Amino acid sequence: MSAPEPGQRPGRVYAPDFLTELFRNPLDPGYADAAARRERSPAPQGWRGTSARAVAVVVLAAVGFLFAVAYRETVADEPSRSQARAGLVAQIQQREAETDQLSVRADRLREEVGRQRDAALSGSQAARLRNLEAGTGLGRVRGDGVVVRLTDAAPKDEDAVTGDSEVGPDKVLYSDLQKVANDLWASGAEAVAINGQRLTATSTIRSAGAAILVDFRPVTSPYEVTAIGPGPMRDRFEESRSAYLMRRVAKIAGLSFQVRDAEDLTLPAATEPRLRYAEPSVSPSPSPSGSGADRSSSPGPTGSGTSSRPSGGVR
Image 1: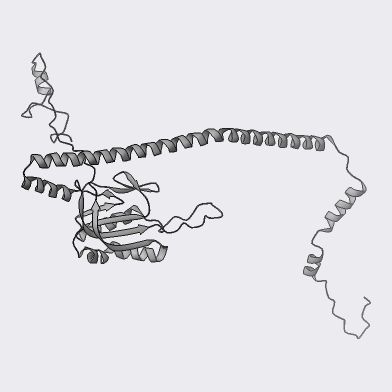
Image 2: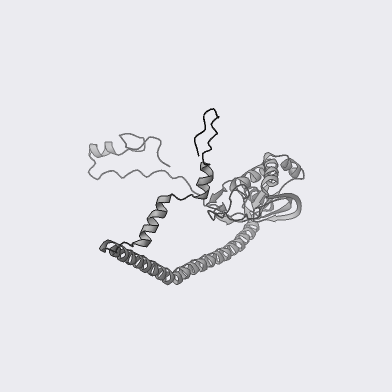
């Protein structure tokens, strides 16, 4: 561009657009020059380059060998793991079948004992004992009542990243069964059972991992809480807090919660509890020598002497 003549106004000079040039040629010119120099005069291969390639080949071969060995060991151990798992499943099924058979036999023996007892007792005494058994859960009962049915929501898709399915309020929790059973008792129920497991004053409803246990026996969805009681029992339960909560959870999470009347229900008897009795602790026998030191160290019936245990005894 020529210099402006005297008296003329200098023209405006425009600089090249930097962003446009950057998008047209994003690579620095120095990289292109270095590549051109390598093409004109390739660098001689020294011992460092050769050794680096050799080490890389050795490392890749070792890694491939390790992967091959690991895969072979995994494939070799798979039949043994599958066999062990199949053996455990077979043992569980066998134990469940044996438990069911023993339960049926126990029910038959219980009925036989009841018949022999009724034959030995008078009519009034036998009737009073049957009423006590029905109230405590140790006797089978029949009558009209209510069935509360709770069902898990449909399983959701697994997470594409973690592979875990969503676990939340779409599953019936053990606390839900606890609330429903307690409110049925509060509504006037005379007998309650969950999936055929009769509840008593010492029954437990708890969780073990993902399973729900009723008196240490697993129950699965759908859960049916059956109760025998007077006619107004359903109306009282419908107004309870657990019914309101389960209806709300069912609406939000997709659970199934249903309450219906049922006629001529039969609830089985609960397993007889193992009774434990308190027994007085046995005092150590007196020493044959009869020395005063031995007598003072052993508490007698009157509590004389010193003892390392509290005065209240032990359970």
